[in-house]
Length: 103
Image (cartoon, rainbow, N blue to C red):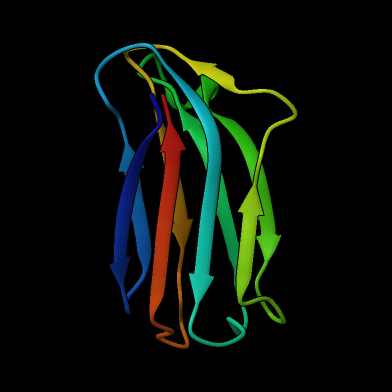
């Protein structure tokens, strides 16, 4: 059964989703109240081993983007000790909503 982890704010995005069990990533959705302005949004697998094992899933220049969806070709299995980290400086202080779909 799919679960939806939702976060929102108007400051920088620095969100980690880590259910504490092995899980499948289906989708990451990001909405900004207006085009983001300068800066890059990044979603990555955050390894519990070390930063050397972190894997960038998506990196998106948000200058002219208000909506961004990352959907792997097939659900990505994430280890129980790892998480997904989303980061964006949000220098223009856009209101944002972030949703991670997992099972």
